[in-house]
Length: 166
Image (cartoon, helix red, strand yellow):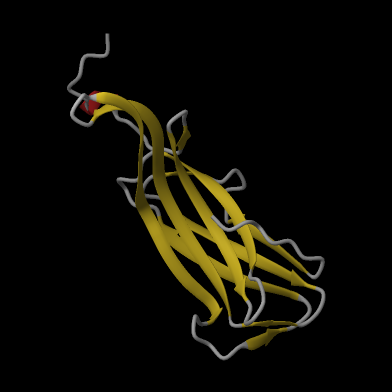
């Protein structure tokens, strides 16, 4: 994940419509607004919104190795993407460039969380995270990145479960 680039000339607010908490259910339609506040003209190739939802795991364990089964430390890791969408709100990836005027600019976004998306979580060996990232892609300069995490909660219908809970 790129480090958030701060600037005294650019401020970005990522707001969810009708949901200030940023907590959603799998299958929900998410809408919102991105507000860029610029104090001077910015030359950019594009303004990009990356919508991502992923899980990542990592752990270490001692495993037998070689003819004598000597224990060596091994690392195990994995990643799975549930949502990965890249949308250009202005400009394009290969654009020649454009100038954003010094004022407030608004862009709307809209996407649907997949119905099978897992619940957000943080654990000792891994996590499930969801994130909106706005990038001002600038030619020949470092990009400006702004991030807003959000939470997904899955609803479990215990009446449909065949497992005994006691």
